[in-house]
Image (cartoon, rainbow, N blue to C red; front, side, top):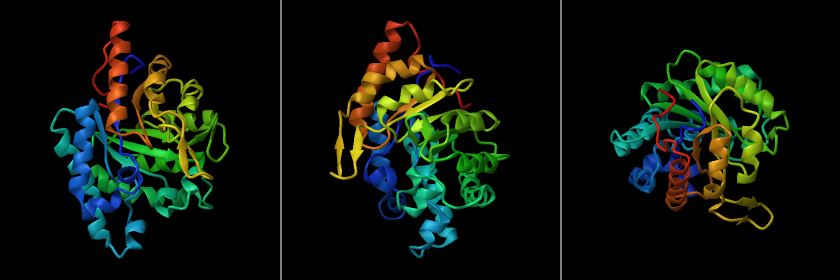
Length: 290
C-alpha cells in the first residue's frame, strides 16, 4: 500500500454531497445517475449518499429508525448496483456536526465526551456494515475526540475504513496537531488509510507529509469557499494539477469533495493516467482496502 497505487474516488458535489440523504427517500434515481456519471468519468470508488443520514437527523423529520435503517442500506445498495462489479463502494460516514447542519463539522468540540460520540456513531456503522460495503469512508472529522470515538466504534465490525479530517493548514479544524489525529488512525486495526477532505487543495501536501505508515487520503474541495461573498474562489481544476504530487507523497485515495463533479473526476483520471504512465507505474491498481 503506497503512493504507486492510485485510486479515483468519485464523490458527490453540491446537492448530492451534503444534502443527498434526503434524496435516498425522495429521488434515489438521481443518486444513481450521479454514481453512474462518476464511474463513466473514470472513478473507481463510489462514495455513498449517507453522509448526513442518521437516526437523529431523520428523526427530526419524522422518519422512524426503521425507515432510517432502510435508507442507510439503500445508500450502499444504490452504489453497489451502479458499480456492477467494476468499482468499489465506500459507505460515507459524516461527523456529528453534519447531522447538526450548523457548520460545527468544521469546528469540532461539540461539548460531548468520547463515549457519547462513540454511542452516536456505532448504530449507524452497524447498519452500514450489515449492507456490506467494501470500506467505510469516514469523512470531515474535525477533531481528535471524534476521531477517537470513531476508531472505537469501528472495532469489531469487520469492515475496513479510511479516516479523513477537515483541517486548518497543519491542524485539525479544532486546532489540534494534525499529527496527533493521524496517530489515532495508526492505532486502529480497522483504519487502512488516513488523510484530509473538504480542504483547500493547496493544504493537502503538507498534511500528507505527516501521515506516515498508512496510505494517504486526498479529497480536497475544488476551490475555496468565501463565506462572506457566499461564492467559490479559485480554479476547479486545481486538484488535477496537484494530484500527481500527492501520489508521490504517499496518497492512495485521490478524489474530490465540494465543487468536484464528473467533469473534475474526468480531468483527474486523465492527469493521473498520464502521470503514472510517464513513471511506468500502474495507474489503476487494486483497492488497498481488501
